[in-house]
Image 1 (cartoon, protein in one colour):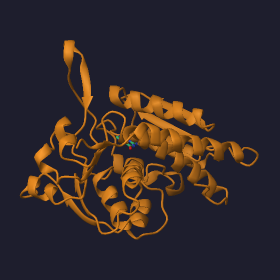
Image 2 (tube, rainbow, N blue to C red; image 1 turned 90 degrees about the vertical axis):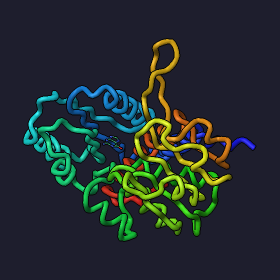
Image 3 (cartoon, helix red, strand yellow; image 1 turned 60 degrees about the horizontal axis):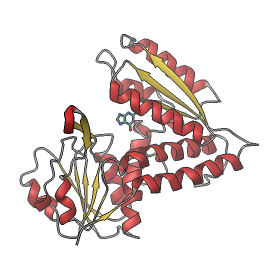
Image 4 (cartoon, rainbow, N blue to C red; image 1 turned 180 degrees about the vertical axis):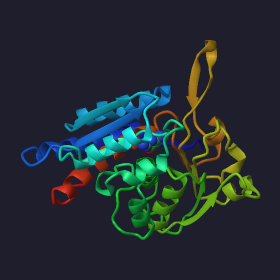
Length: 290
Ligand code: GUN
């Protein structure tokens, strides 16, 4: 039987609708604001940043765009972060990664006010997540867990395997799955027998960044597969196309899987809106509505 295709686009639209409703309800008290900072001209980053700002406005929030030249110094970026930290109209700050090589990303992340760190990358938020405290958590991992929970009411006791150990996806998604009481394995490039490790998974999260790396025979029959990959490869007629980290024929073994595009990607943006709303509420002593 072919796998259930998890409709990330529809899930994201539902979540965005709920967020817009809450933003409208809070209108007399606050208007959440998100500052999006882009340094340089990475084409993929430009696309992401544009769609983030558009989604923010569609939800009734304010977007503050800051586009800086590729040659921006670390000092100048840190000065902008300090200004945004101090601006009460800015509830969330997102500095798009990667940054040009003259800037130390970790230094910039550490300079963010943790209360405005809607990416959940600041060491304070990373520490809170791993200690099981309430924190702003990274958007893509949050979206992955929400999509898994559209298939499984509870993830408790599931064998979850995460491929990839990045700070943006692999490590935080593992923490969130652990918080959901899954039994979590983090696999990576040095894992001894990756296909066999993956075959143990009831829930497989692929966050490697290599086109169609996970083969259909690496998947336990009936498993749920969350594909975080966004890889541009040559398509038909000289055009390029976007594929995930999981081979297309994985739907022959998986029980449920997220498509690329239309799976995790739309959820990431919806979760960014959710984090911005949550950050704005926390900064104004309001209960988080969602
Ligand atoms: N680059 C790739 N993914 C992300 C993300 O989630 N947040 C930021 N700030 N940059 C990214």
